Amino acid sequence: MNTATAPRKYTGIAIALHWLLALSLVGIFSVGLYMADLPFSPQRLKLYNWHKWAGITILILSAVRLAWRLTHKPPALPQSVTLGMPGWQVTAYHATHVLMYALFFIVPLVGWAYSSAAGFPIVLFGVVPLPDFVSASKPLAELIKPWHQITAFALAGLVVLHVAAAIKHHFIDKDGLLLRMMPGKR
Image (cartoon, rainbow, N blue to C red; front, side, top):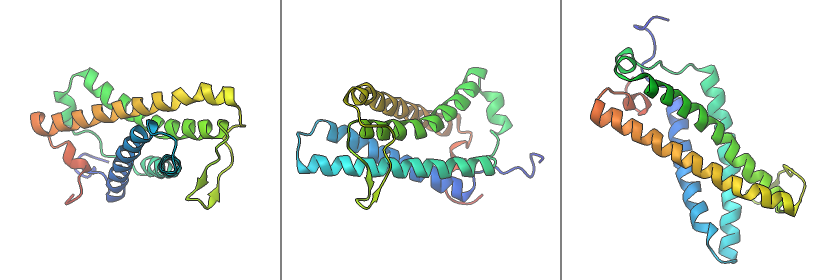
């Protein structure tokens, strides 16, 4: 494919999946921060169940997004952008995306493992019981628990880095990179 016919924007499906996942991650992270310090109450239990449902939904959404990405090649970085970026920025661009994709799966899977180890099964939307990811074990739950928080904060940090880079490219470099992921004309 030559550069004249190469897509300059992501597909509409890729854009929709990107923004849906972005909003979902902000929502679940915010709820996670809020609920963690609540005293034991019906509201806390409700939020924990919602958080687990959202985590499984994000896991499924991430699988759909990855499948789409693997079957629909994303547009290459424009040559004007890659020529203007130091090598470390190109490496950071690719590494950030790979790490974010990995954490899209790691964070909910670790959360599922923690919930299973703690003896709290996940019943998706209160209707569909999911299998335990690991056997119930209090020592294992205590070992896993901090990793859900660590990986969630790592993902949040990468998201902040990703957003900061997009803003930099849009407002400082003015290279149109952000527009590739915005809905609208191709």
